[in-house]
Image (cartoon, rainbow over all chains, first blue to last red; front, top):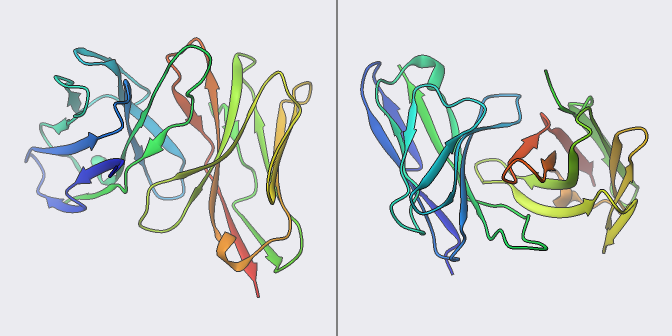
Amino acid sequence: NAGVTQTPKFRILKIGQSMTLQCTQDMNHNYMYWYRQDPGMGLKLIYYSVGAGITDKGEVPNGYNVSRSTTEDFPLRLELAAPSQTSVYFCASTLRQRGGGDTQYFGPGTRLTVL
Amino acid sequence: DQQVKQNSPSLSVQEGRISILNCDYTNSMFDYFLWYKKYPAEGPTFLISISSIKDKNEDGRFTVFLNKSAKHLSLHIVPSQPGDSAVYFCAAIDGGSNYKLTFGKGTLLTVNP
């Protein structure tokens, strides 16, 4: 198993450009999450999904969109990039089932700079 | 409003000694707590967890203690090794919140040979 994979690893955007951060997991996990980590800060939840076709906002959703058409994929879309979106983005997944499965597995991250 | 606080940004210990990382929380609805370890340019990796119905969980060199009345948990690493040098994040879950993690800001642990 590859676990949680993210592409790209690095990206530089100009203000106003758009892009999609890709996230794929091969563990058949039902829950998936997107976090961002700013320097010196903990991870903050952007969006999450409890299954294909179901998404919901986290703590900092403004400026982002997500979709979950399959169990495996959970892309994060930035429509109009702003310098405040400069951050490291982590995707995570977990198999949430009755009685357990709370451990989230993280991808390696995407480092995004908006200039 | 930080619900999970790690008040020590950094900690330095000698190899072989004990490392103690602390975490405080404010939300009484948190019922599951986790520690993650993060190396530079990598994603966080799960280390150890504890349910709110327990006060201690041990896994090899790692032990997590939970004091619910004080809303405090700690991670003990004994003995500390240079490979343990990383950022450690405390995280908490409110089971009624679709299992979203709330993270602290992290503590950078440096273990000196």
